[in-house]
Image 1 (spheres, protein in one colour):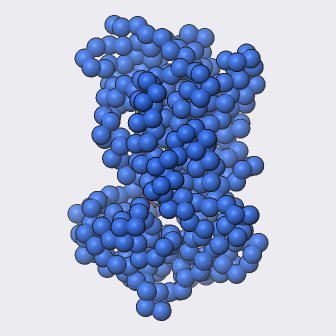
Image 2 (tube, protein in one colour):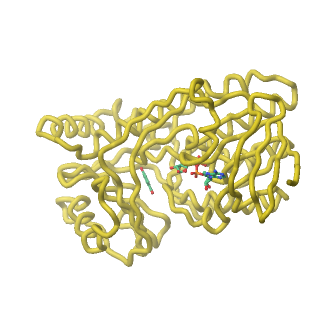
Image 3 (cartoon, protein in one colour):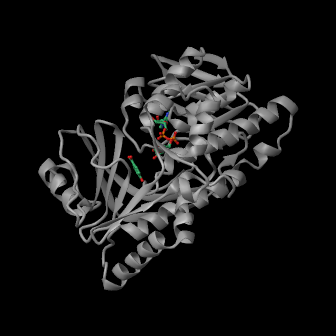
Length: 394
Ligand code: APR
Ligand code: PHB
């Protein structure tokens, strides 16, 4: 067994773990990232792609924004569709000029990995059998198998950034944590298509066949989703069926519809809401999906992961610099305020836009009333807009 030492052991090279490593580096704090998958896998994994203003600002401050600023698409609004009509929510006008940036999560991940390695940072890709030890002592350690040998990393703090299927959350003693969750009775089937977006902005559509979403990854690539049954497999969704449903759910009565193109990727995502409280125990701190999951309606997942990493990184910097533990002690409470706001927002968007089992005329009228209110009332539209671009103070 090889014994090594670092200040912060980070488990997981997703947006949470990578952002944390960069925030720590900016404060002169050393870390090692331990990642189960190989680099190519992590860099190719397709996820959502809407960055809040605060996420963009942080990446720029850390010197990680160059490609995002060149290739990301800045959007000033989103669209809600129902009854075959499109209604624009003017995000920037309603939020004092704030914007969202369309830039795929895996592009962020690629930029963060490249910069981390260029700074001489260590990322152990392809690590197996990761286990956490002594998390309530001031000498925690992480063991893992890597490149055929057993490694032991001694550290001051462990950051569990290993997503919703990782090992870190299970290291929290069951008696010391509470889990809050909701499963939704539907999934999203998503495709990436080699065709220019049919509209310059994101469209969320309410339709009697179920929800649909039009988004994009660049001037030549469209990202589209349709609500499907949680039991569906990719076999039940040949390309032709996907396009027919997208056309049915996204077309407007003025003749606009989605343009078809070669399907580059197709996958199914389940929708759930999960929060673990607290997000810390001893010297173990959870960040991102390891501590909470949101349904993708509202695109909050990556933004929450980055926000946790910033709070944790700054709290660790105060602790190392001045021995001040207040930020670390308050870590969970600070993050959970933002997390629960995003949990509510994404649950609310999901409830307003999807078709539920047992969906009846009453539910339909409630959804349509809510949609009309959000589109016609400046107060309601502002509430949606400020949540969508990301609330600074929650
Ligand atoms: N050991 C080491 N690494 C692990 C382990 C493990 N046992 N289990 C999982 N991992 C890795 C995963 O391979 C992944 O690269 O941890 C990383 C977690 O990254 P994400 O799942 O991207 O989670 P996070 O960084 O919190 O970012 C949240 O990702 O799932 C999306 O929608 C979500 O956009 C949100 C974002
Ligand atoms: C995406 O572009 O993948 C996307 C956009 C908005 C969402 C979810 C996903 O709410």
